[in-house]
Amino acid sequence: MLRTSCQRLLVALVCLPFAFAGSFLSGSIRWRVADVSTHTVEFQVVSYWNRSFSAFQSPTLGPPVLGSLVDLQAQSTVRLRFGDGTWTYLKGMITNINEAEDWIEVVTAPTPKAYSQGFEYKFINQNSLYTETQFIYVPWKVTFEGCCRYSGLQRDSDTPFNITSTVLVDGSVSFSPDPRVLPKIHVPTGGLFTVTSVVQDVSYNQASSSSLHWQACANTNLPDFTRLDANTGDIKWDVAIPGIYHLCISVSLASQPTVYSDVDFLVVSQASPSPIQINTDFANVLKGFVNLNFNVNVLASIEPTMIKAGDQIGFQVGFVPAMRNGPTAPDTGHFTVAQIASGSAEATLKFTVQPWMEGWNSFCFAAYVINDMKISSASSMKCSDAYFFGSDVIMVDATAAEQYKYRVAGQVVANHFEVREGVQLRVSISAWMPNSLGAVERSMVADLNGNGVLDESEVQIFYGNRPRPLGATLTNVSLNTSILTYEPPRTYAGADIEICINAQGASSAATLSKVNQFCITIMVKKCVWTVKTGESFISIAQSIGISWLQLWNFNKGNYSRPDIDLRTGDPVNVGQLYQVDNGDTLYNIADRFSSTVPILYGDSTFVCPFAPVLPCVAS
Image (cartoon, rainbow, N blue to C red; front, side):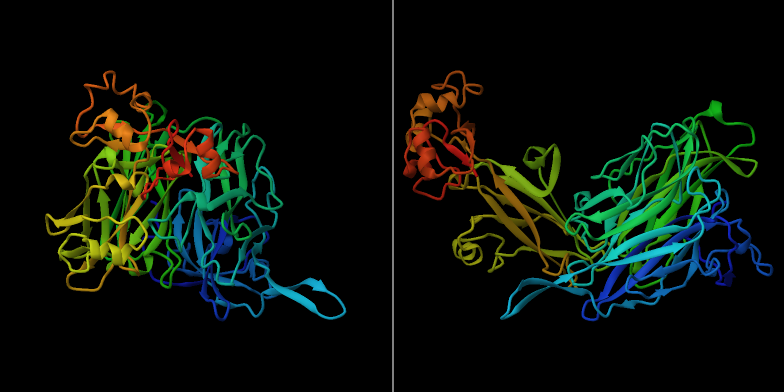
């Protein structure tokens, strides 16, 4: 029976004087800056060890249990070095036990470390009169080390382990990267798995894997034929020889490449695919809320012809909470396996989200077939990040019809909408507090008089020289939903217009963010007009200084009879986009297309200027 970190038992103290044998399976370091002024850093070391190793068997208490406190002594070899010449032995809590795979998880949180110095002098210029210096910060290299690696590895068996992370305390970075994996990953030749990671100080709306970079740890090599995607953490496993390998992957910040964290773990290479595979798609981030129940259903498919009589199905979950002040494991909750039926199995993880879990968390799942109390086959690992919102957070969501959603490379960009000038855009704004049934007040930030409409004086005060959403309206249609409407004028073709919404609890000052605002961006299409009543190809062409024939040439694919087909509300292309090159000026662009600077730039606030042949310029 799998016991997980979602359970809490009585705490006992177990001292572990290791023998010289390989019991270390996996480990990683993560940290956060607790106090910038004193350069104080809090650390957590997560490590996995063989449960059946004799040092973990207490003569009086029996096998280790969840909540047991352990000293990781290992003949005084296991320690955390802080990089400044100081180090400490580690004491931690058993936060997860997997009997089927014979491992325990130990989370240690040593006393916060205050670094006394962290700058080196670099001479910039030196002569007989003076010396210039510059303070250059040198990251601290923190190391989790000890002996020995798991016996029976294809390589590095019974050898010392060395896992590192670099720490910046100059205020530029608050958290380390936070890689997440199970201690043992089962994968067949040709299989794929992912080392996921998050950055704790990145908000839910700003999260992106592009902020991270994956590579093999320093002084280590990936097994032959193994391929690592540096941008996603995906690992293609093409190792042909079955056995147990150890991998070490380093995850660094794209903005600060010198800041990284290693994660060292085992890969069980299988000769053939497992008869059980997890089917749940974790492409989207799981979401939950503090003080509310949180459920995750995990589905697995089973190949019945490969299951023997007496086989059992098991699931395992690895939980990595946000690094905050508080316990190291979830309080209450359980992981249950449903009845197996018709070639499938389902497990459900349930617990109540605790306040200290607010922020980024992670879950990694695997399923396996157990025969005679031993794992005979296991699925590949699947992980998902989860974000738990605080109880006082106001959630805000903005959506519109499909044709108005802005996309980049086929992916919808949140809170960005695209519309033609002269077309009314309707955006549904929903705001609610997950832990309250109370109403949430909504208003446009620039709506100073509170009538729900932005007038000339308001947009002049609030927007200044930026594009002004004059006439935008916000109308409440239900307790928690409003409709924002706005029709951009022709003079804003090509402009980006921002409208910000205040969302505030009617009975509290709970807000979505510190600035108490939620903003959407309306992107008005370049070089496309909406035909007004009475307009024709001739009148439109005259207004931009070209012939109707040239205008029709931009629209031949849409209008075969320019004298008849044009109707009020139709889109009409008034030019083609031109990408400005290095060295381009309005003068040489105008000359190139037989135009003039006044026509190209226009006498008004056109963002998309005009020229006779290629009138629209995209900068």
